[in-house]
Length: 129
Image (cartoon, rainbow, N blue to C red; front, side, top):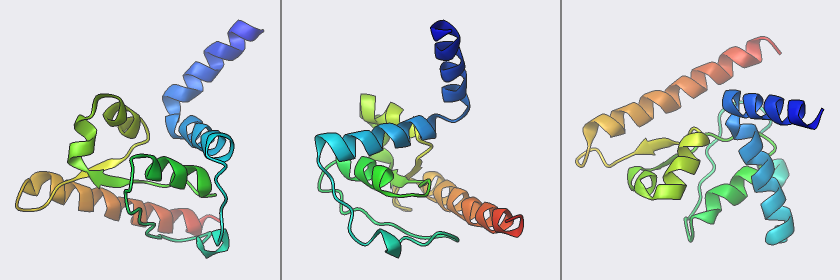
């Protein structure tokens, strides 16, 4: 049974890795950092929202992921994706790279298109609720 559980968990991870990452972020933020959340009622339960990190460290995004009751789609500087472990982790979390328009117009445009697609998807989901 244990082996079957591991196989099924691995399969589910390949389908939706962000849920395991959110759980790991929650565990890390509550056990390792003794993270306390204040003002969580300010995060809207429906509709699009912008949550901004000041990026004092790379852990900001992970802490925000663990603190939010909703799934978060990150838009991050494209250079972060070049860091070996962090790049893999943020790709797994389906983060979107963004670059200044004058530096890379293609990455810039793709980031805004992807962000707009999530807003449209969010509106469609609320029609069925």
